[in-house]
Image 1 (tube, helix red, strand yellow):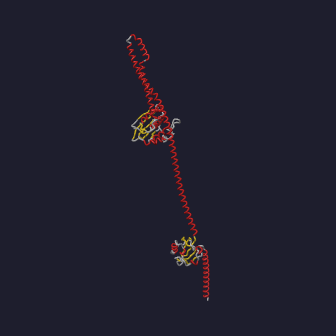
Image 2: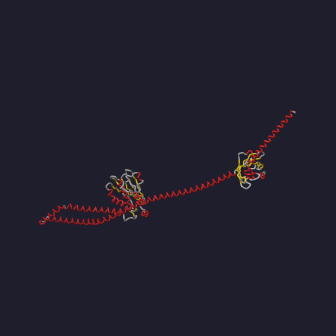
Length: 472
Protein backbone atom coordinates (compact mmCIF):
# COMPACT_ATOMS: atom_id res chain seq x y z
CA UNK A 1 0.00 0.00 0.00
CA UNK A 2 2.65 2.29 0.98
CA UNK A 3 4.78 1.25 -1.95
CA UNK A 4 1.93 1.83 -4.45
CA UNK A 5 1.16 5.16 -2.94
CA UNK A 6 4.80 6.14 -3.30
CA UNK A 7 4.93 5.04 -6.95
CA UNK A 8 1.78 6.89 -7.88
CA UNK A 9 3.14 10.07 -6.31
CA UNK A 10 6.33 9.76 -8.28
CA UNK A 11 4.49 9.29 -11.60
CA UNK A 12 2.29 12.28 -10.85
CA UNK A 13 5.36 14.40 -10.14
CA UNK A 14 7.01 13.25 -13.36
CA UNK A 15 3.89 14.06 -15.34
CA UNK A 16 3.75 17.51 -13.83
CA UNK A 17 7.38 18.10 -14.68
CA UNK A 18 6.82 16.84 -18.21
CA UNK A 19 3.81 19.04 -18.65
CA UNK A 20 5.68 22.04 -17.43
CA UNK A 21 8.58 21.31 -19.79
CA UNK A 22 6.19 21.00 -22.68
CA UNK A 23 4.58 24.26 -21.73
CA UNK A 24 7.97 25.94 -21.44
CA UNK A 25 9.11 24.49 -24.76
CA UNK A 26 5.91 25.63 -26.39
CA UNK A 27 6.39 29.07 -24.95
CA UNK A 28 10.02 29.14 -26.12
CA UNK A 29 8.95 27.94 -29.55
CA UNK A 30 6.29 30.62 -29.68
CA UNK A 31 8.82 33.24 -28.65
CA UNK A 32 11.27 31.89 -31.27
CA UNK A 33 8.57 31.90 -33.94
CA UNK A 34 7.56 35.40 -33.00
CA UNK A 35 11.19 36.48 -33.18
CA UNK A 36 11.74 34.74 -36.53
CA UNK A 37 8.52 36.15 -37.93
CA UNK A 38 9.25 39.68 -36.79
CA UNK A 39 12.93 39.86 -37.76
CA UNK A 40 13.72 41.79 -40.93
CA UNK A 41 16.21 39.19 -42.16
CA UNK A 42 15.11 36.19 -44.23
CA UNK A 43 15.45 33.00 -42.17
CA UNK A 44 15.25 29.76 -44.15
CA UNK A 45 15.81 26.06 -43.80
CA UNK A 46 16.94 23.89 -46.67
CA UNK A 47 18.81 20.72 -47.42
CA UNK A 48 22.30 20.51 -48.85
CA UNK A 49 20.90 20.83 -52.41
CA UNK A 50 19.00 24.02 -51.56
CA UNK A 51 15.45 22.58 -51.30
CA UNK A 52 13.49 24.90 -49.02
CA UNK A 53 11.50 23.58 -46.04
CA UNK A 54 11.03 26.78 -44.00
CA UNK A 55 10.80 30.51 -44.74
CA UNK A 56 9.94 33.40 -42.46
CA UNK A 57 7.66 36.29 -43.55
CA UNK A 58 10.64 38.53 -44.38
CA UNK A 59 11.02 36.36 -47.50
CA UNK A 60 7.91 37.89 -49.01
CA UNK A 61 8.72 41.36 -47.72
CA UNK A 62 12.13 41.39 -49.39
CA UNK A 63 11.65 39.26 -52.55
CA UNK A 64 7.87 39.63 -53.13
CA UNK A 65 7.10 35.87 -53.20
CA UNK A 66 4.40 34.41 -50.94
CA UNK A 67 5.20 31.84 -48.30
CA UNK A 68 3.01 29.21 -49.94
CA UNK A 69 4.42 29.50 -53.47
CA UNK A 70 8.01 29.36 -52.28
CA UNK A 71 7.99 26.34 -49.93
CA UNK A 72 9.17 23.07 -51.42
CA UNK A 73 11.04 25.03 -54.14
CA UNK A 74 14.81 25.35 -54.49
CA UNK A 75 16.67 28.40 -53.16
CA UNK A 76 18.74 28.48 -56.35
CA UNK A 77 15.60 29.23 -58.39
CA UNK A 78 15.50 32.72 -56.89
CA UNK A 79 19.19 33.51 -57.40
CA UNK A 80 20.70 35.55 -60.24
CA UNK A 81 21.92 33.13 -62.86
CA UNK A 82 25.49 34.49 -62.63
CA UNK A 83 25.65 33.87 -58.85
CA UNK A 84 23.66 30.55 -58.69
CA UNK A 85 26.48 28.02 -59.08
CA UNK A 86 28.84 29.50 -56.50
CA UNK A 87 25.96 30.12 -54.05
CA UNK A 88 24.69 26.48 -54.19
CA UNK A 89 28.28 25.30 -53.80
CA UNK A 90 28.55 27.52 -50.72
CA UNK A 91 25.38 25.86 -49.27
CA UNK A 92 26.42 22.30 -50.19
CA UNK A 93 29.63 22.33 -48.19
CA UNK A 94 30.12 19.64 -45.57
CA UNK A 95 29.12 20.63 -42.05
CA UNK A 96 32.72 20.40 -40.90
CA UNK A 97 33.69 23.00 -43.56
CA UNK A 98 30.95 25.47 -42.62
CA UNK A 99 32.12 28.43 -40.60
CA UNK A 100 29.39 30.48 -38.96
CA UNK A 101 31.16 33.80 -39.55
CA UNK A 102 31.33 33.27 -43.32
CA UNK A 103 28.88 35.03 -45.60
CA UNK A 104 28.46 35.42 -49.32
CA UNK A 105 27.20 38.50 -51.15
CA UNK A 106 24.93 37.37 -54.00
CA UNK A 107 22.10 38.67 -56.13
CA UNK A 108 18.54 37.36 -55.85
CA UNK A 109 15.81 38.13 -58.38
CA UNK A 110 12.69 39.93 -57.04
CA UNK A 111 9.32 38.72 -58.20
CA UNK A 112 9.02 41.89 -60.25
CA UNK A 113 12.22 41.01 -62.10
CA UNK A 114 14.86 43.31 -60.64
CA UNK A 115 17.88 42.03 -58.77
CA UNK A 116 18.53 42.55 -55.04
CA UNK A 117 21.83 42.11 -53.27
CA UNK A 118 21.60 39.86 -50.18
CA UNK A 119 24.24 38.61 -47.74
CA UNK A 120 23.98 34.80 -47.35
CA UNK A 121 25.01 33.12 -44.08
CA UNK A 122 24.77 29.31 -43.45
CA UNK A 123 24.87 27.21 -40.31
CA UNK A 124 24.84 23.39 -40.16
CA UNK A 125 21.56 21.88 -38.88
CA UNK A 126 20.36 18.33 -38.16
CA UNK A 127 20.01 15.58 -40.79
CA UNK A 128 22.23 17.47 -43.31
CA UNK A 129 19.91 20.46 -43.24
CA UNK A 130 21.11 24.05 -43.38
CA UNK A 131 19.83 26.97 -41.39
CA UNK A 132 20.52 30.19 -43.23
CA UNK A 133 19.83 33.88 -43.25
CA UNK A 134 19.65 36.48 -45.99
CA UNK A 135 20.35 40.07 -44.99
CA UNK A 136 19.30 42.84 -47.36
CA UNK A 137 22.43 44.76 -48.39
CA UNK A 138 21.05 46.01 -51.67
CA UNK A 139 21.07 49.69 -50.69
CA UNK A 140 24.54 49.33 -49.23
CA UNK A 141 25.88 47.58 -52.34
CA UNK A 142 24.19 50.03 -54.63
CA UNK A 143 25.49 52.91 -52.52
CA UNK A 144 28.97 51.40 -52.66
CA UNK A 145 28.58 50.88 -56.40
CA UNK A 146 27.33 54.44 -56.84
CA UNK A 147 30.18 55.64 -54.70
CA UNK A 148 32.61 53.58 -56.73
CA UNK A 149 31.15 54.89 -59.97
CA UNK A 150 31.28 58.41 -58.55
CA UNK A 151 34.88 57.82 -57.51
CA UNK A 152 35.69 56.46 -60.95
CA UNK A 153 34.02 59.42 -62.59
CA UNK A 154 35.81 61.74 -60.18
CA UNK A 155 39.12 60.01 -60.88
CA UNK A 156 38.35 60.23 -64.59
CA UNK A 157 37.54 63.93 -64.24
CA UNK A 158 40.64 64.45 -62.08
CA UNK A 159 42.75 62.54 -64.59
CA UNK A 160 41.22 64.52 -67.44
CA UNK A 161 41.68 67.78 -65.57
CA UNK A 162 45.22 66.75 -64.63
CA UNK A 163 45.94 65.96 -68.27
CA UNK A 164 44.47 69.32 -69.26
CA UNK A 165 46.55 71.08 -66.60
CA UNK A 166 49.67 69.20 -67.69
CA UNK A 167 48.95 70.15 -71.29
CA UNK A 168 48.33 73.75 -70.23
CA UNK A 169 51.52 73.68 -68.17
CA UNK A 170 53.44 72.35 -71.17
CA UNK A 171 51.96 75.07 -73.35
CA UNK A 172 52.77 77.63 -70.67
CA UNK A 173 56.30 76.26 -70.29
CA UNK A 174 56.73 76.32 -74.07
CA UNK A 175 55.41 79.87 -74.16
CA UNK A 176 57.76 80.86 -71.32
CA UNK A 177 60.67 79.21 -73.17
CA UNK A 178 59.69 81.01 -76.36
CA UNK A 179 59.44 84.33 -74.54
CA UNK A 180 62.74 83.75 -72.76
CA UNK A 181 64.33 82.83 -76.08
CA UNK A 182 62.74 85.87 -77.70
CA UNK A 183 64.01 88.01 -74.82
CA UNK A 184 67.50 86.55 -75.21
CA UNK A 185 67.35 87.18 -78.95
CA UNK A 186 66.09 90.70 -78.28
CA UNK A 187 68.91 91.34 -75.80
CA UNK A 188 71.43 89.87 -78.23
CA UNK A 189 69.98 91.93 -81.09
CA UNK A 190 70.12 95.04 -78.91
CA UNK A 191 73.72 94.24 -77.99
CA UNK A 192 74.63 93.70 -81.64
CA UNK A 193 72.76 96.88 -82.54
CA UNK A 194 74.76 98.77 -79.92
CA UNK A 195 77.99 97.26 -81.20
CA UNK A 196 77.03 97.98 -84.79
CA UNK A 197 76.04 101.53 -83.83
CA UNK A 198 79.33 101.98 -81.98
CA UNK A 199 81.30 100.57 -84.88
CA UNK A 200 79.36 102.73 -87.28
CA UNK A 201 80.15 105.81 -85.20
CA UNK A 202 83.79 104.80 -85.05
CA UNK A 203 83.82 104.02 -88.76
CA UNK A 204 82.23 107.39 -89.50
CA UNK A 205 84.79 109.00 -87.24
CA UNK A 206 87.63 107.20 -88.98
CA UNK A 207 86.12 108.00 -92.37
CA UNK A 208 85.94 111.68 -91.41
CA UNK A 209 89.52 111.57 -90.15
CA UNK A 210 90.54 109.77 -93.32
CA UNK A 211 88.79 112.32 -95.51
CA UNK A 212 90.36 115.12 -93.52
CA UNK A 213 93.77 113.48 -93.78
CA UNK A 214 93.32 112.93 -97.49
CA UNK A 215 92.21 116.56 -97.91
CA UNK A 216 95.15 117.82 -95.88
CA UNK A 217 97.48 115.59 -97.84
CA UNK A 218 96.08 116.91 -101.09
CA UNK A 219 96.40 120.53 -99.95
CA UNK A 220 99.93 119.99 -98.69
CA UNK A 221 100.94 118.25 -101.88
CA UNK A 222 100.28 121.41 -103.92
CA UNK A 223 102.73 123.75 -102.11
CA UNK A 224 105.17 120.88 -101.68
CA UNK A 225 105.08 120.39 -105.41
CA UNK A 226 106.08 123.91 -106.32
CA UNK A 227 108.49 124.28 -103.37
CA UNK A 228 110.17 121.09 -104.48
CA UNK A 229 110.27 122.42 -108.04
CA UNK A 230 111.70 125.73 -106.80
CA UNK A 231 114.36 123.92 -104.81
CA UNK A 232 115.31 121.99 -107.93
CA UNK A 233 115.65 125.22 -109.85
CA UNK A 234 117.52 126.83 -106.94
CA UNK A 235 119.94 123.91 -106.83
CA UNK A 236 120.65 124.41 -110.54
CA UNK A 237 120.99 128.19 -110.13
CA UNK A 238 123.32 127.79 -107.15
CA UNK A 239 125.43 125.41 -109.16
CA UNK A 240 125.59 127.88 -112.02
CA UNK A 241 126.34 130.71 -109.55
CA UNK A 242 129.19 128.72 -108.06
CA UNK A 243 130.59 128.16 -111.55
CA UNK A 244 130.40 131.91 -112.09
CA UNK A 245 132.13 132.56 -108.80
CA UNK A 246 134.83 130.09 -109.71
CA UNK A 247 135.31 131.95 -112.98
CA UNK A 248 135.57 135.26 -111.08
CA UNK A 249 138.18 133.74 -108.80
CA UNK A 250 140.18 132.66 -111.85
CA UNK A 251 139.86 136.10 -113.34
CA UNK A 252 141.02 137.65 -110.08
CA UNK A 253 144.08 135.46 -110.04
CA UNK A 254 144.90 136.54 -113.61
CA UNK A 255 144.36 140.21 -112.74
CA UNK A 256 147.00 140.06 -110.03
CA UNK A 257 149.62 139.87 -112.84
CA UNK A 258 148.28 143.03 -114.42
CA UNK A 259 149.34 146.29 -112.64
CA UNK A 260 146.52 148.26 -114.19
CA UNK A 261 143.88 145.92 -112.69
CA UNK A 262 145.54 145.47 -109.30
CA UNK A 263 143.42 148.10 -107.51
CA UNK A 264 140.10 146.68 -108.67
CA UNK A 265 141.36 143.15 -107.94
CA UNK A 266 142.14 144.16 -104.36
CA UNK A 267 138.58 145.36 -104.02
CA UNK A 268 137.23 141.96 -105.18
CA UNK A 269 139.59 140.11 -102.86
CA UNK A 270 138.47 142.22 -99.91
CA UNK A 271 134.81 141.61 -100.75
CA UNK A 272 135.40 137.84 -101.08
CA UNK A 273 137.04 137.74 -97.66
CA UNK A 274 134.35 139.91 -96.12
CA UNK A 275 131.51 137.68 -97.42
CA UNK A 276 133.42 134.47 -96.56
CA UNK A 277 132.58 132.96 -99.92
CA UNK A 278 134.16 129.61 -99.07
CA UNK A 279 131.84 129.06 -96.10
CA UNK A 280 128.84 130.40 -98.04
CA UNK A 281 129.42 127.93 -100.86
CA UNK A 282 129.66 125.00 -98.44
CA UNK A 283 126.71 126.07 -96.26
CA UNK A 284 124.45 126.89 -99.17
CA UNK A 285 124.78 123.35 -100.50
CA UNK A 286 123.94 121.96 -97.03
CA UNK A 287 120.90 124.22 -96.74
CA UNK A 288 119.56 123.10 -100.10
CA UNK A 289 120.16 119.44 -99.22
CA UNK A 290 118.49 119.78 -95.81
CA UNK A 291 115.50 121.55 -97.38
CA UNK A 292 115.19 118.78 -99.91
CA UNK A 293 115.38 116.18 -97.14
CA UNK A 294 112.67 118.01 -95.18
CA UNK A 295 110.43 118.07 -98.22
CA UNK A 296 110.98 114.35 -98.74
CA UNK A 297 109.94 113.72 -95.15
CA UNK A 298 106.81 115.82 -95.58
CA UNK A 299 106.00 113.90 -98.75
CA UNK A 300 106.46 110.62 -96.85
CA UNK A 301 104.11 111.78 -94.07
CA UNK A 302 101.53 112.87 -96.64
CA UNK A 303 101.80 109.53 -98.40
CA UNK A 304 101.40 107.70 -95.08
CA UNK A 305 98.28 109.77 -94.36
CA UNK A 306 96.85 108.70 -97.70
CA UNK A 307 97.85 105.06 -97.17
CA UNK A 308 96.34 105.08 -93.67
CA UNK A 309 93.02 106.64 -94.67
CA UNK A 310 92.44 104.61 -97.87
CA UNK A 311 89.47 106.84 -98.56
CA UNK A 312 89.23 105.66 -102.14
CA UNK A 313 89.75 101.99 -101.20
CA UNK A 314 86.50 100.84 -99.54
CA UNK A 315 86.46 97.50 -101.33
CA UNK A 316 88.15 94.26 -100.33
CA UNK A 317 91.62 93.88 -101.81
CA UNK A 318 94.90 92.08 -101.42
CA UNK A 319 96.98 94.20 -99.03
CA UNK A 320 100.56 94.23 -97.76
CA UNK A 321 99.93 94.70 -94.03
CA UNK A 322 103.56 95.65 -93.46
CA UNK A 323 102.89 98.87 -95.35
CA UNK A 324 99.75 99.41 -93.27
CA UNK A 325 101.78 98.95 -90.07
CA UNK A 326 104.46 101.36 -91.27
CA UNK A 327 102.00 104.04 -92.29
CA UNK A 328 100.13 103.68 -88.99
CA UNK A 329 103.41 103.95 -87.06
CA UNK A 330 104.19 107.22 -88.86
CA UNK A 331 100.73 108.56 -87.99
CA UNK A 332 101.08 107.76 -84.26
CA UNK A 333 104.77 108.63 -84.12
CA UNK A 334 104.24 112.05 -82.56
CA UNK A 335 102.08 110.49 -79.79
CA UNK A 336 104.46 107.67 -78.84
CA UNK A 337 107.99 108.67 -79.83
CA UNK A 338 108.85 110.33 -76.51
CA UNK A 339 108.37 107.21 -74.37
CA UNK A 340 108.22 104.22 -76.70
CA UNK A 341 110.91 102.43 -78.70
CA UNK A 342 109.33 100.46 -81.53
CA UNK A 343 110.95 97.15 -82.54
CA UNK A 344 109.81 95.66 -85.84
CA UNK A 345 110.33 91.93 -86.36
CA UNK A 346 108.52 91.39 -89.62
CA UNK A 347 108.30 87.84 -90.87
CA UNK A 348 106.93 86.16 -93.99
CA UNK A 349 103.45 87.66 -94.31
CA UNK A 350 101.70 87.22 -97.68
CA UNK A 351 99.13 89.63 -99.06
CA UNK A 352 95.95 89.51 -96.95
CA UNK A 353 92.49 89.97 -98.41
CA UNK A 354 90.85 92.64 -96.27
CA UNK A 355 89.54 96.21 -96.07
CA UNK A 356 92.81 98.06 -95.37
CA UNK A 357 91.34 101.19 -93.76
CA UNK A 358 89.58 99.09 -91.11
CA UNK A 359 92.63 96.90 -90.42
CA UNK A 360 94.75 100.08 -90.10
CA UNK A 361 92.19 101.32 -87.58
CA UNK A 362 92.81 98.16 -85.52
CA UNK A 363 96.60 98.73 -85.70
CA UNK A 364 96.07 102.34 -84.59
CA UNK A 365 93.96 101.31 -81.56
CA UNK A 366 96.38 98.59 -80.44
CA UNK A 367 99.48 100.77 -80.84
CA UNK A 368 97.93 103.68 -78.90
CA UNK A 369 96.75 101.29 -76.14
CA UNK A 370 100.23 99.79 -75.93
CA UNK A 371 101.76 103.26 -75.62
CA UNK A 372 99.23 104.28 -72.96
CA UNK A 373 100.04 101.14 -70.93
CA UNK A 374 103.69 102.27 -70.66
CA UNK A 375 104.01 104.78 -67.82
CA UNK A 376 107.60 106.01 -68.33
CA UNK A 377 109.79 104.48 -71.00
CA UNK A 378 109.25 101.14 -72.68
CA UNK A 379 109.22 99.05 -75.79
CA UNK A 380 106.54 98.07 -78.27
CA UNK A 381 107.40 95.06 -80.40
CA UNK A 382 105.61 94.22 -83.66
CA UNK A 383 105.98 90.69 -85.06
CA UNK A 384 104.33 89.20 -88.13
CA UNK A 385 104.18 85.82 -89.81
CA UNK A 386 101.88 83.25 -91.35
CA UNK A 387 100.74 79.73 -90.59
CA UNK A 388 98.83 77.55 -93.04
CA UNK A 389 95.95 79.70 -94.38
CA UNK A 390 96.29 82.48 -91.80
CA UNK A 391 98.45 85.51 -91.30
CA UNK A 392 99.19 86.81 -87.82
CA UNK A 393 100.34 90.09 -86.30
CA UNK A 394 101.52 90.46 -82.71
CA UNK A 395 101.78 93.78 -80.89
CA UNK A 396 103.32 93.49 -77.41
CA UNK A 397 104.36 96.09 -74.88
CA UNK A 398 106.35 96.32 -71.66
CA UNK A 399 103.59 98.21 -69.85
CA UNK A 400 101.79 97.54 -66.61
CA UNK A 401 99.68 94.62 -67.92
CA UNK A 402 96.00 93.82 -67.42
CA UNK A 403 94.35 92.67 -64.19
CA UNK A 404 92.94 89.09 -64.46
CA UNK A 405 89.48 90.32 -63.41
CA UNK A 406 89.47 92.75 -66.35
CA UNK A 407 90.67 90.29 -68.99
CA UNK A 408 87.13 89.06 -69.70
CA UNK A 409 85.76 92.58 -70.14
CA UNK A 410 88.37 94.38 -72.23
CA UNK A 411 86.38 93.85 -75.44
CA UNK A 412 83.10 95.10 -73.96
CA UNK A 413 81.81 98.38 -75.45
CA UNK A 414 82.52 101.43 -73.23
CA UNK A 415 84.66 99.43 -70.78
CA UNK A 416 87.94 101.19 -70.08
CA UNK A 417 90.62 101.18 -67.40
CA UNK A 418 91.61 104.75 -68.19
CA UNK A 419 90.52 107.73 -66.16
CA UNK A 420 87.52 109.81 -67.19
CA UNK A 421 88.29 111.84 -70.29
CA UNK A 422 91.21 109.68 -71.42
CA UNK A 423 89.32 106.96 -73.25
CA UNK A 424 85.87 106.02 -74.58
CA UNK A 425 86.19 102.26 -74.14
CA UNK A 426 85.40 101.69 -77.82
CA UNK A 427 88.86 101.01 -79.27
CA UNK A 428 89.18 97.31 -78.42
CA UNK A 429 85.44 96.67 -78.91
CA UNK A 430 85.55 98.14 -82.40
CA UNK A 431 88.80 96.30 -83.16
CA UNK A 432 87.27 93.01 -82.00
CA UNK A 433 84.22 93.55 -84.23
CA UNK A 434 86.37 94.42 -87.27
CA UNK A 435 88.59 91.34 -86.90
CA UNK A 436 85.60 89.09 -86.21
CA UNK A 437 83.81 90.28 -89.35
CA UNK A 438 87.01 89.66 -91.31
CA UNK A 439 86.73 86.02 -90.22
CA UNK A 440 89.66 86.32 -87.81
CA UNK A 441 90.21 86.56 -84.08
CA UNK A 442 92.11 88.54 -81.44
CA UNK A 443 93.97 86.70 -78.67
CA UNK A 444 95.26 88.37 -75.51
CA UNK A 445 98.04 87.37 -73.13
CA UNK A 446 98.94 89.51 -70.15
CA UNK A 447 100.58 89.40 -66.75
CA UNK A 448 100.35 92.26 -64.29
CA UNK A 449 103.66 94.14 -64.33
CA UNK A 450 104.94 92.33 -67.45
CA UNK A 451 102.96 93.99 -70.22
CA UNK A 452 100.43 92.57 -72.66
CA UNK A 453 100.44 90.85 -76.04
CA UNK A 454 97.65 91.14 -78.60
CA UNK A 455 97.72 88.59 -81.43
CA UNK A 456 95.60 89.14 -84.53
CA UNK A 457 94.83 86.19 -86.80
CA UNK A 458 93.36 86.85 -90.25
CA UNK A 459 92.51 84.46 -93.07
CA UNK A 460 94.73 85.07 -96.08
CA UNK A 461 91.74 84.79 -98.43
CA UNK A 462 88.34 85.77 -97.12
CA UNK A 463 86.25 86.69 -100.17
CA UNK A 464 83.19 85.03 -98.65
CA UNK A 465 83.14 87.72 -95.96
CA UNK A 466 82.63 90.63 -98.39
CA UNK A 467 78.87 90.84 -98.19
CA UNK A 468 78.81 90.30 -94.41
CA UNK A 469 81.22 93.13 -93.69
CA UNK A 470 79.70 95.55 -96.20
CA UNK A 471 76.20 94.96 -94.77
CA UNK A 472 77.51 95.57 -91.26
